[in-house]
Length: 247
Ligand SMILES: *C/C=C(C)/C=C/C=C(C)/C=C/C1=C(C)CCCC1(C)C
Image (tube, rainbow, N blue to C red; front, top):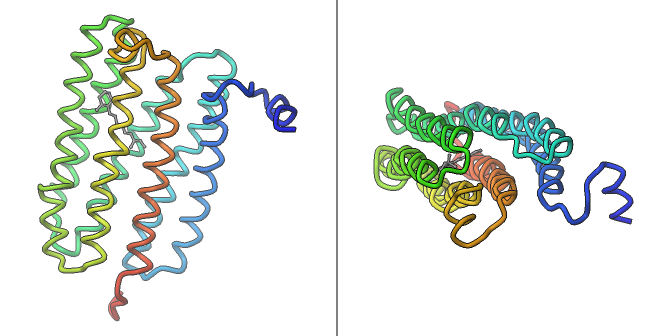
């Protein structure tokens, strides 16, 4: 039964990469509808945050639609589409951090710093994936340069400005929410460099012999966890924070 269905949509049962592209598309689309509809039922001050969550999963859904097609047609990793998706959605995740801490005094400069760090991480990561042609030294070098941006976001969320502002807000829901998002950055985002190291010439590929095609498996699973998970944390903050008259 499942085989017939998967054949009909041109996905082989023994191809988990194709399967996760397919499921990823559905999950992103469904989440986007959910966040967009729920936006109507939360307090005014959270509506923009929910819209951003819907945009993150919505943008990803469109990219998954094309990435799945690309992968099925060529069997190759859709590197460019992947990085276009991330370059749009990761800065939007920075916007979520900014919006959640704005009431506690977050400055626009915090948002700019987070966006610069994440774009740094993605541009240098893209160079590492697209232009190194299996050269192990180059891959490791660009991976390390990219990680500087990652560590900056990680630091900001756990101990830097975002964490300090959350503490200052005095709102237990926001404090818990920011801590949950920081966990996503620590654990969920760490899945990406693992995927990166699976590419031809990466440490896990040459060192442990992991399959080069697993790069997409890691990225697809990480995207679902991080994009939908982030959105659900924000949604949870919105529905459980104390009601304020002015909002
Ligand atoms: C929705 C997409 C998200 C949250 C993407 C996050 C991507 C990363 C955290 C990527 C990190 C990388 C490194 C830290 C080093 C190697 C290259 C990257 C770009 C895979």
